[in-house]
Length: 352
Image (cartoon, rainbow, N blue to C red; front, side, top):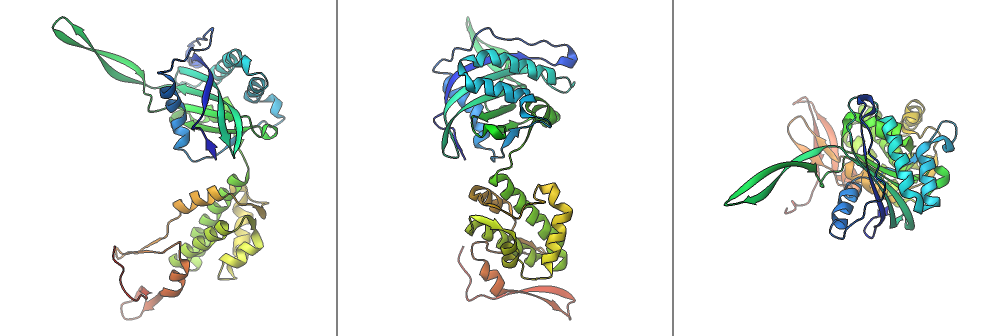
């Protein structure tokens, strides 16, 4: 978890980067920008809002040979070692971004490189490098009094409600390639920001593994449990899975399978599914790991607990009290109507 509430901008460098394939140039400012008090809250909201609204999926700098060959890892390390050099290195970062801006779809824009303090991640206070880019300009109107008339002037500028691209590089877990958060609002050039400019991979901590394992379980429920059992059992399998993660600090696969799979015949099916699909989720060799509570909470919000029937009826199962569905919902087959049915037991109807 990150806390940006007390973040302080120690320095801000602003440059402009063009598109190399169109022979557009870069503009590098000689000096850092002098922030004024009235701008600070606006620019902080512009930079940080996308990260507050976004699920925390962390990345790390990576290189197939050695991290020291990753340009952005080197630049970040130089800044963290000597923050007074941030403006000079911000020029190198902008030039590096320019070298990756060689596709016709990539737009020119302003690059902001900031050095930030008073930020916490995983309850640890750290310094942070923020790199942001604005690309899309918005029309807006200005008005000017001229004599007895009010003139309308059309101008263009940056919409402070939408950051186009950005990343936060935390001075944390350097040996793994730093922890990094990134946003990209424009999907037409998604690869160049993550892969070419930053050169990052997913940060494979307990948060990452917990999310991936739960997503794997969700697909197993859909692909295997549903065809073998029914929709109710698919929903209940995911309910039991999430509850296992919620009440345990450590995941252990054998205990997990014995607890969440009512049908023992599905245990070998689960293991076979993992052999076939595990690499896709980066869990092929994972059998035990610490559970990240935040990832479980996020997953619970996304898992559907509704059975949709072709008779335009929905049955919503309670994830908080799963034993109710186990005890009081039964599925059967009506020979006369040649239809399936769900039988629901209750004492009285609850008021909404």
